[in-house]
Length: 257
Image (cartoon, rainbow, N blue to C red; front, side, top):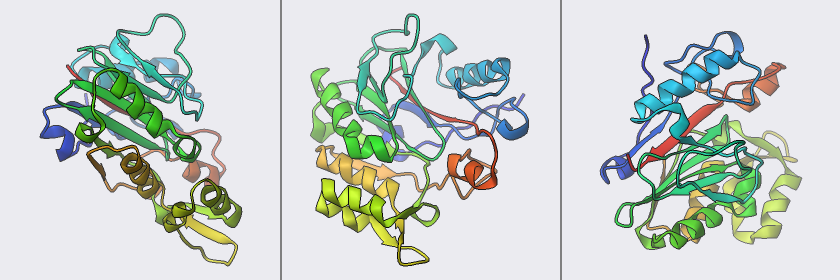
């Protein structure tokens, strides 16, 4: 049996935090979803998704019931998990916890996963930051929720995981206008596209900037482009460009153990 080997980052590893940005490798799904598809909302075989989620949880030292992930809606809503969810998953796009054994989890397939921790206060969190959530304040929401649990922003370390990178993320000029209307400084995260009305958006750079605006002590990106590396990552945009009907989801997790 293949075992998932997630991407980790020194900022979190050196702080002694169990975490992982899981790739598509090490799972049992087939076809479009080949590999470690953990998306409950995908049209994949539910038994395969369940086994993949079990493997992720096992790699994090727990079981599938320990995974605390929201029903993601591209919002700025943060939920506090003090134990396994009861019943339906709550809507939201960030999960924070101070409870050992709870595995904070988010799903992505081009959007940016962000894992955060205040090692001293023993507060951790996971954020799903697509462009809508990042623009709408999900990063600030998560940091505020961590503060309420005892964290201090300047002690928080944050890592942006594999997501669509600027070289793969072409958007329209109106997309840039929306960001600059919200904050003129956001223009630095756009480069010229192939034609005059197209732009290339730096999502991970923008999310790191939002983390810095929220006052976190250290923020970094792993440097992986999900859209450009089919063997390792699922990608919503790549699937759309090919006319494929669906795509797998990657899970990113952090826990206090």
